[in-house]
Image (cartoon, rainbow, N blue to C red; front, side, top):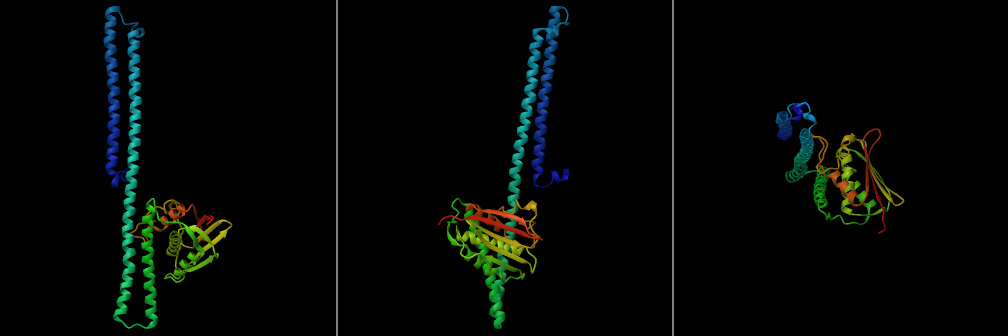
Length: 333
C-alpha cells in the first residue's frame, strides 16, 4: 500500500506533504510545552512569594493571583490548540487542492501523449495506403476490376483523412467562445442518408441498418450535426466485431427529433461512461490499443449536442453493445 502511495510522480509531493504536516504539529507541540513550562515556573514564583508574605501556601490556589494566571494559561492553551488545529486543517486542504490540480495536469499530459500516438498512426496509415495504391498504378497495368478496387480503397482512405481533419478543426473551433457552429435549417434526413452511404461497404463487413424518417428538418449547424452522426456511426462500426449489425435510426416525435445509433459490440463499462466525452480520452492505453482513434469523436458529439441544447443518453444494448440516444427540440425557423 505504501509503495503504491509513494510511487510515481507524486513521490516528492507526498514527502513534502508529510514533512510539512509533521513540522506544523511539532511547532504546535513545542508552543504547547512552552506554555505549560511558563505556567509552571510562574506558579512556583507566585507560590514562593505568597508563602514568604503569608507564611504558608495552603490557600494559594484561592488567591486572585493564581486565578488570574490560571485563566491566562487556559486561554493560551485553547488558543494554541485551536489555532494549531485550524492551521493544520487549512494546510491539509490546501495541499490536497494542489494535489488535485497536479493530478489533473498529469492526466491531461497523459491524454495528450495518447493523442500524439493516435494522431500519428491515424495520419500515417491512410497516407501509406494511398501511396501504395499510387505506386501500384505507376508500376503495373492493372485489370479494371483491381484498378476499381484500389480506387475505392484510396477514396475510403481520403474520406478517413478528411474526417480526421474535420474533427481536429471542429474541436479547435469548439474550444473558442465563437465556436463557428452557426445554426441553419438543415435537412438532417439527407445528412443521415449521405453519411450512411459511406459505411454500407466496410472492411469488417458490418451490416449498417438505417431507419431514416423523411424530410426531418432541424435548426442546427450542418457541419456539427454531420460530425455527430459520422463519429457515432464510425465508433459503432469500429468497436463492433466482424459481421455484426449497426443501426442508425432517425425519428420525429411531435417537436422532438430523436437520433439513435446502436451496435452489438463490446459495450462501454459503467465506470467509463462519465469519462468518454472528455477531450482526448480513450479507454485503455494508446500503445497497446487495437482500435484506432484520436479521442476527439465523442468529445465533439457531446459539445455539439450541448451547444444546440440537446440531450444525449447512453444505454446498454441487448444482448450486448451500446445505444446512443440523442434528442433535440425542434424550433420554428
